[in-house]
Image (cartoon, rainbow, N blue to C red; front, top):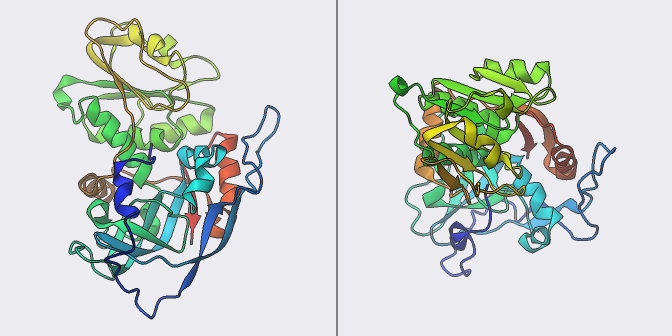
Length: 348
């Protein structure tokens, strides 16, 4: 998932080469930050929510774009589990304004940002997105054309993550190969997107897991062929040996790689998202390739590809709840409690 990596460098250059912010824009804005005043904690057993009072919305200065940057008026962002993880550790307070996903309108451009112009509708991943205005890296930002930012603002991080993971596993696939893909957790952000992407990338069969009849029906409606209720069975216990080509472990629980090995064919791929204690198998099946996904790297060209799928009706957002910028803490509490189907939206 998105994290601090080399792509952040362009967001933290010195204030030289700064472009003037148009006088029609306000000098201050609302932004959601980890104040560090109280600890942010996930819910404990028996509780429905944790305490995320550490996340507060307050007034900040509207930033100015510098070289290779643009300033975007943010319409929509969203909550990813990685955002919640950020404030549970020490990074939240260090990062200042939180948030990664964004979709909105360019209102100012810095030097050497010929790709974007004022008025462009754009989307992507950046730092400090939980704000009325955010700085974005021009080269990593995709234009939306006629698509409304409000329709796609919850998709960037999870879509790029799952697309990159599936491509590491060999996607797109030749439909004649009858590729079977297992996605370990179907209902969350990376999962419901991965189901749609796997089908778009040529998978003949997509198998996943979720909890409850309503979620099963939803996942089947977006392309899953087989959905296992994890309350009744572990997904890998339902699979025949040597029956699967790709396992995308988007949940990343410890021991999943070992459980997956019997079902994988020789020549198959196991790829997992790190963060919940998962790891590669120490006893992999011969011929099975194992991949630690690592970090999501934002890509404008990948966002362009994803927008084509969105416009074709092959990548659809699903929003469980929407929260205003003034209640990001509420969205974090719902995310941390688990069982989010799709995404939680933040509106500005």
